[in-house]
Length: 72
Image (cartoon, rainbow, N blue to C red; front, side, top):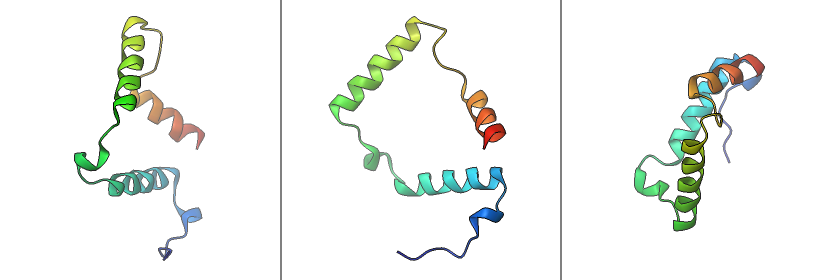
């Protein structure tokens, strides 16, 4: 594996999060490559149904990202 010439320790938290996002996005550029198994789809549907039934579960995405940036 070739390591990029980037000193991760010199990046800010926001820059590291951006890098993580870029790496994640590069793993599967098309939806076909992200196909779920039936078991995965069923589990996600179950979890979504559980969240829909109980409004106290989960937090909004923007709040998640804020917490990550504050604690990273």
